[in-house]
Length: 238
Image (cartoon, rainbow, N blue to C red; front, side):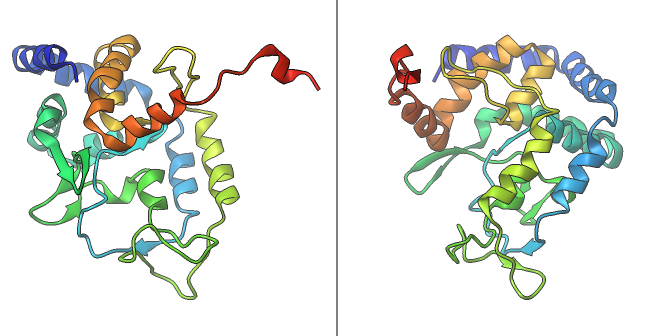
């Protein structure tokens, strides 16, 4: 992990906090309500579930840019100003949310309140949170604590999830974190925060040099990507 870059972010955040807060809030305000109704509609097409609120899965999760703005709109319209400022401070000091979950390194979700054991943005949580624990075609769930609120339980096919998210993907930003590895639309909330606070280039640097090293799942994902063989021109020939 790039400790020097992390240090610069901490110092700059403390020195320029007011300006940073204004800039990141203005970015989402300027985005407006574009795509918000569609995001809510697509989210509502997933089965409603409940869980034991153990918080084991409440780590920094990836989302689409439209979902980032949906969460920020919820924060800006429903939270008190002092609470919003506390959120921004926590985002600037994301290093304080490092955690060890079993044998894996994780960055805990900024919206998880461990004291009350609730999600602070539960009504607008992104696809990644909503999909976790849904009943799969093989009859299994990632977490046995997740239960459908309606009976009979609903099996969700992978094709359905892909098609549902495709509609958001078409209207969300994408970037290439690692040269030659292709663009992706799915980034942690912290990436989008720094993308609108600084620039896409600086946010990508933070993603590569801090966010990925802080997360075992992200590290494994990109290590797996690097192990894929190069596609040669001859591979396209029949």
